Image 1 (cartoon, helix red, strand yellow):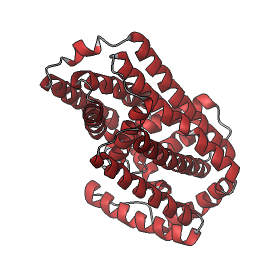
Image 2 (cartoon, helix red, strand yellow):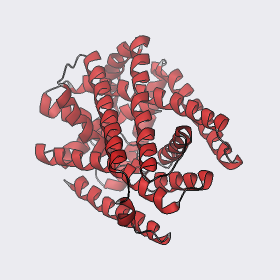
Image 3 (tube, helix red, strand yellow):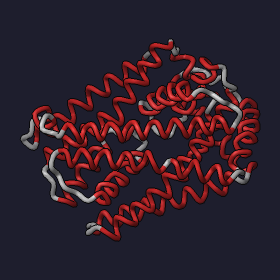
Image 4 (cartoon, helix red, strand yellow):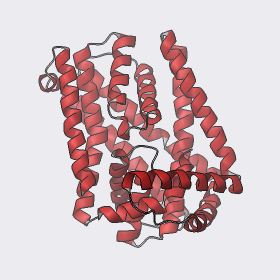
Length: 354
C-alpha cells in the first residue's frame, strides 16, 4: 500500500530529525533512551492500551446506537486502520473516518450509510469532549502554574478559538438547511482541490452528496437528539485524553524529571492543539517542538532527557498505531483506489468536525 510506504518514509525522517536535535544538545538519543525506567515505560504502554481500548469501545457504542452491532474486535481493526490513515494525511481531510466506514462495510458487511452516521456521532462526541476538556485544562494550568505571559496569551487564544468553533458547530448541527449548505460548499472546495492535485475527474456529484447527507444526517440526529447518550460518549472521551498526558508524565518521571501532572497536561494540550491548527498529520514536528520548548522553557528541565521522553511518548502513541494499522491494511488486502473512493463518498461527513 502506497500510504504504508509513505508512513515508513515519514517515520525515518522523523527518527532522523529527532535524533539530530538530540545531538545538538550533546545527547545521543539511543544512549539516553536506554536510561529510562522500564517500569515507567510499561506504565506508559498501559495508558496507551487504555486510550485505544476506550476509543474503540466508544466507536462500538456509536455503531450499536445506529443499528450496527459489530464485534468489538472487528471494530478495533477498523479503528486502528482508520487511525493509521488519519495519521498520514492532513487532519482537515475525512480520510480516517472514510477508511473506518470502508473497512466495516467491505469486510464485515456493515451498512455503509449507517457507519457514516455512527462515525459522525463518534467524531461529534470527540469534538465536544476535546473542546471542553482542553478549555478546562488550559484554564486550570493558568490558575495553578506560574505560566509566562506569552504562553498565557497563547492558551487564551486557543480557548477562544475552541469555544467559538464548538458554539458554531452546535448551532449548525440543529439547522439542517444551513448544515447542508455548508456541506455543499465544502464539497465544492474539496472537489476543486482534488481535481487540481490529482489531475483527474471527480466522480461524485452534488446530487450524490445531497442524498448521502439526508440519510446520514437523519440517522445521526436520532442519536444526537438523545442528549444522555451524547453526554455519556463525550464524557468517556476524557479517559483517552487523560491517558495521553499520564503517559507523557510517566515517561518524564522515568528519566528522573519531576513535573506536576497539571504542568504536563497544560504542555500536552497546547502542543496537541497547535498540531491540529497547523493541519499536519499527527502534529508531527509541531508537537515535538511545542512540548519540548514548553517543558524546557517553563520548568527548566534537561533538554536531552525531555527529547528522549517525548520521543518515547510519540513512538508509543503515534507509531505503534501507525504500523499496526498499516499491517492490518496489508494483511486484509485493502486497495488504495478503494480507500480513495471511500474518501470521496465521505466528504460531507468531514464538516462534522467543525
